[in-house]
Picture 1: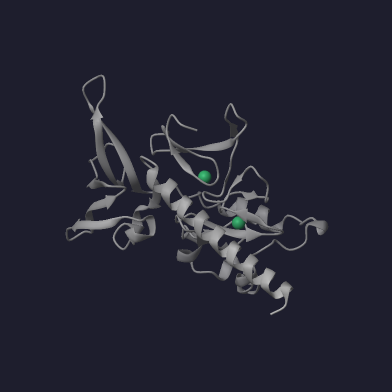
Picture 2: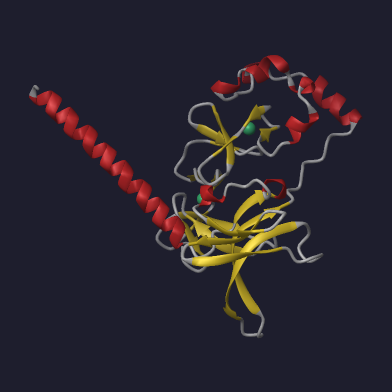
Amino acid sequence: MTTDDRVITLLAALVSNTNRIAQSLELMTMQNAKEPNYQRPIEQYRDFDFETIGAQVKARDEHGVTALDWGGFIWTRRSPQNKFGEAIWFSRPLGKKEDGSVDYARLITFRKFTEAEPLPRKVEAIVDQAPRKKDTGPLPTTPATGANQSSGVEHLPEKKTNAPSYCRLHLADMTANAIGVFAHSVGDGGLCNGTASLPDTPDRCDLHVVAMTEQSGTGVLFHRIKDADGKTISYCDGTTVKPNGKH
Ligand SMILES: [Zn+2]
Ligand SMILES: [Zn+2]
């Protein structure tokens, strides 16, 4: 082995170690989050693989999972009628609030996502017939979904175009990342979450594929994670999710 070879081997070992440390840190931070409140379409509840969010199934009934073990706590399935629309979530009590009601933390919520409305026929015709700018070129798609370009959206089955994993902006399939957020790549390192394309800049959260638009006192960019009622339940600085009150 030459000295160069040894240095290369050593560097490779260091890089692999660093990656492992980064992964463990990420996992630890995720597990320290008091209430991540992951959001999933309600259709995914029955067959959802809870191991993908690091939770262990503790109990189930004929409809699906009813209790989970996550972060050292047991989280129970809840789905109160007529209160928050169609939703199923897993929560645990945190204690009593000042008014005497119980405060809950949520681990994951399966809810109905609002679909964009289909365009009326007349509007559709105008949109489709409008001349396209010559300099924009073809819409970017992920390298793996070249098939979309030849098939065209009008030939795609209705089911597919309505799927939460389908980007109607770019007519491309999105894949879910480690925490189940759908996105596909666009252009040079950009990511699209199905409604917006985000360039590869420091203010993009790769975890949730959203722009971090707020800044803490120390200049750290972050974005809020809100529950179904629009209440901020945690903060994310692009790599870690922190409970409400700490960002
Ligand atoms: Zn897209
Ligand atoms: Zn984030």
